[in-house]
Amino acid sequence: MPPEIEPGDGDPGDVDPAESEEKSPESDPGHRGDRWIRPYFEDSALWPLLIVAFVIAVTIASAVLLLAFGDRNPFALAALLGLGWMSADTVWGDLRHRRLGLVSGLILSIWLFAGVATLAAIRTGLF
Image (tube, rainbow, N blue to C red; front, side, top):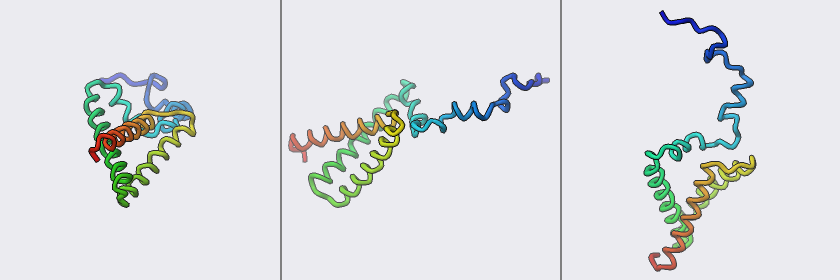
């Protein structure tokens, strides 16, 4: 017969609502997607997946930049506007709370590497 749990013995139902609101990730305004992406940084077994996803995002952003500015493709310009809007909204949301989270850092680094890759493609004559 399992022992009975007395109130205050760690029973999940004994959580003070004020205490749970303070510690819940939803109450942290700067968390956005940080809670979802943090395991990819903490678990070294997931680093290859993170690297591949990062390289794919850089490739897509670089292709959009090349098509938007190199070919002046209107669809690529629209895609760039949409991606830029979403990126700026995420980063600005974190900066409003004086905190740059993992997702915002990833977004900024993706755009930085995409810009470098775009300039390298233009300078070397690949595009």
